Amino acid sequence: MKDTITIATRESALAMWQSEFVAAQIEAHTPFKTQLLPMTTEGDQRLEVTLNKIGGKGLFLKELEQAMLDGRADIAVHSMKDVPADLPADFQICAVFPRADESDAFVSNQFQQLAELPQGAVVGTSSLRRQAQLLAVRPDLTVKPLRGNVNSRLQKLDDGLYDAIILASAGLIRLGFDARINSRLTAPDWLPAVSQGAVGIECLHTDAELAAALQVLADEHTWQCVRAERALNLKLNGSCSVAIGALASYQPDDTIALKAGVFSPDGSRTITARQQGYDPVKLGGYVADDLLNQGAEEILALAD
Image (cartoon, rainbow, N blue to C red; front, side):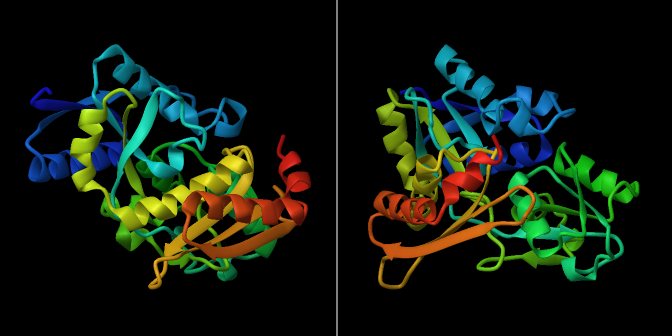
């Protein structure tokens, strides 16, 4: 096995932070040295349209995955919420780190929380899930698309284009923007994206030796929760083109509690389900079945 691991990463500040964090963990806990291979993905380049219209979050991965297939990189580092539920057969997730803050952040220069926004206020978000939950509690709001990296989104808020924006708390914290978080939108009333707050390592299925070596970095509780959420998403055919929220938590009795919701894009319909169990994949399937039995398929079809 080689001495140096090459890490494929997107070039955004947040992606670089995550990859540098992973590189430091690899060098601290394994015999490997590391080097980064920064790349620009199609998802980073095409900021003029929302992700659900150009192929989904997989656009953030395919160039990194190609680099692994070509032998230019050994692993890739991702926010797990950006990893499609149906991972290509050539790849595997070989380690997931302890989950950070999974909440969404309400960010505004004038208001401290969602309830304070005046009628018709303009809120920016790149996520159909966030849009749906916003409109479910505040149908009077005007929700407008907001894409770009964390810094550019904050700049658009500061330029007065929005009254408030919704971002992942973990990303703001990792980049040192803790003070920009006015309040947090949290479960059980507000559900995050599947696997939000978790960072994972992707590698080739054929690289079993490397995957085994990196297992020392894995947080088992986080991985079990992420597996439950991803199993739910897979059964619902979840992507960024549908509004699905989920959060699994590891319990003191070693079970996993999973709550999930499916939301119509206009916020008019919400279906939620919660179950608890030991097997994360089965649990995700059971919760998905519960949602489907309540009529989730009809809601999910609205986004097509």
